[in-house]
Amino acid sequence: MTTHTAAPAQQDGGATILEIAQQPDAWREVAGRSDEQAATFLADVLARPDLRVILTGAGSSAFAGDIAAPALRRHLNRRVDSIATTDIVAGPLDHLEPGTPTLLVSFARSGNSPESLATTALADQFVDQVWHLVLTCDRDGKLGRAHLGRDHSLVVYMPERTNDSGFAMTSSLTSMLLSCLTLLGGARPKDIEALARGAEHLIGLQDDIRVLAQAGKQRFVYLGSGPLQGLAQESALKLLELTAGEVVTYFDSPLGFRHGPKSVLDADTLAVVYVSTDPYTRRYDLDIVAELGAQLGAENVRVISTEPAPAESGTTVVIPGLDGLSDSLVALPYLVFAQYLALFTSLAHAKTPDNPFPSGEVSRVVRGVTIYPMDGRR
Image (cartoon, rainbow, N blue to C red):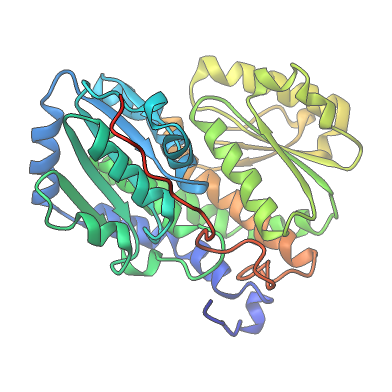
């Protein structure tokens, strides 16, 4: 792993803090690109009325699919499933449908994870008609190289700087997610500019987030509805990764949390609730915010929202300028909050965010996975 020397102002945030802060400009770069080849490829594939879309990846890349899928279902008006590569590899016949024409969208920072390569190979083996859209950050990665020049494949590379050198996926994840929402979900340049400005607003609040991280909480609960549940899962993973497992993290939906998982709460818990932009869903989110505020105290609840929430329930971080955008889109600037909280909590635990596992127990690119061949049965 590359070693970075942090400037004093970064306070040992290394490459990770820089990769978080570069996201608004990286998103603008994604928005500014014009790819006629991609447009033609996808128009031909999406013209098929019986097409199924599968969004796939592992870890954070899988959560990108969870965040994007609802927006794609609405925009494309067709079946869109988010299925992790780890699930497809372990049970391909549970997830792949031979007779259903399928567009497999792969999210892969490096494209070197064994499951990423195996999933596209299994789709080729078991699906009669399959097309591949590979979203990746590494031009030298195995997945991208394997699909370059193939008739039924399209490889879209993210801006070079988003191939994060830090341990955790930050700008790589959001750039791939944004590319997916642009190519398949109808995200417009003006939407992306609003998201970039929202992220810049959060970047300006990083000192406040650092203070929050230094409070020394040992349990963190993230809640979100619909696409924001995928965001909650990514937030929990980010914090778990960067603290090398020294804090307890949990995620759920606001409604699901009451059905047993609420047992995780104690006096040492910080709860983060991502509030939906949908007026109907928002009511359920605000109900759990009020309930958490009553149980934990408002000072131990953070509400991330595009508009103000009742002050007595918790401290609200309002991200302006996002009116009318879907939850799949606002998840992007919401993620910046989660990334900073994970980074600064990592530093508070005396970890090195760029490499929280110096002994290699957990690696940046997964190693040690044996991929077993599948026979021809269906």
